[in-house]
Image 1 (cartoon, rainbow, N blue to C red):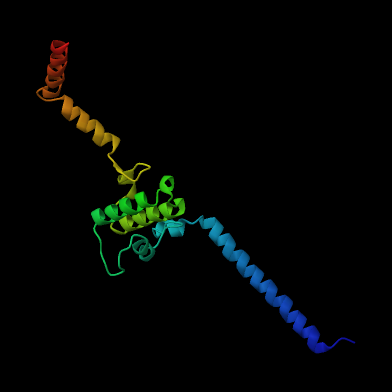
Image 2 (image 1 turned 30 degrees about the vertical axis):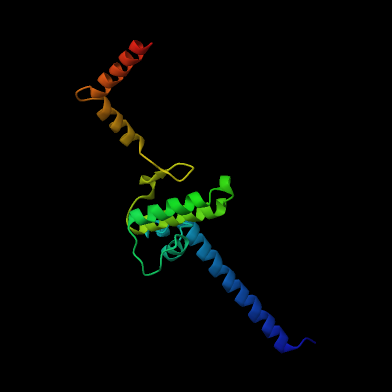
Length: 158
């Protein structure tokens, strides 16, 4: 005959596993039903870098409170230094980019407001560039007159 102690132990283990499985399934169902809305409502960005790590990546001390301009200067310096075209690392470039975003978000800036080209140089918004063109061509027409004067000089020298 089987040992009654072993029989009781097996019953306890089977009951415990059943209880744990029900708990995990309930938690999974609750999380799946929420679809991550609780994290989104709390302002948590999935995969976002912590500010502490971002400061380390951009070589700021943990007690330092850099300005947005300082963050962008360090970003540009390290981003260019790690350009894969010059032997740098794409992995490090992505860490530097994410660190910039994390630091700017911590300062309540939208990182998407700051656009950069592949070389890490800051690029003006298309709206800003169009406004600058409009300002250059409008007004008293000095730009158009200057180009007409240059054309006249070239024709006279020919």
